[in-house]
Image 1: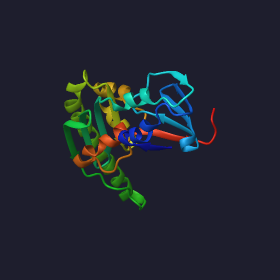
Image 2: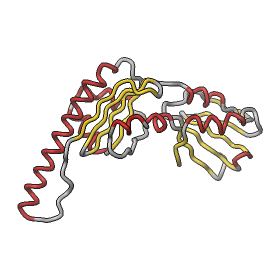
Image 3: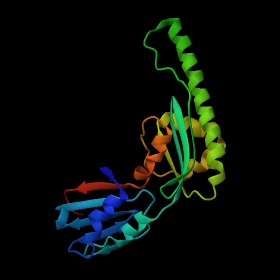
Image 4: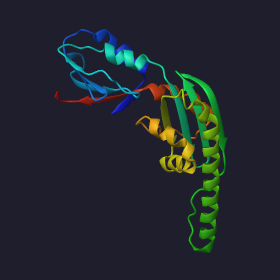
Length: 210
């Protein structure tokens, strides 16, 4: 399984429209059986695919129409050490705030110093999570009505802790797409490069047709 940018998917599939093969739209994904790529390919867009149907040819128009759509997306990225919250209107970043807070790395030695170290690290992590949650509420909250989708990324534990810290963030988790974005340090540049991943299409190759 891999993720392919939506523009690359369009370039790959548009020329195949109407060519010999078989197409099945089901459960938010499309299965294409074509001699062009010797086998079966499954495409699953990030933001769903409502179309359903079976065709005795390659019919990619519903998929291409879906992946060409722009959405308003609320994004929250958290790792121990930093966070980034942003709102995308299509591929344009229209609101953002990033922050960092030092959190010590894990301690190698045992003994009482390790306990002190662990407590200090936990305090630092808690402070970061609370700050990230406050920023997310302040920045993303006003977009709640417009943002149809959410996207979460960074470190899963840190993100879950941040969402738990403020009940007002429940909507973000409810609207989050399935893909968790395992981004590096959450910085402004990380946010600015995110549209490719947000709109990328999950592609899975299968050796056997169903």
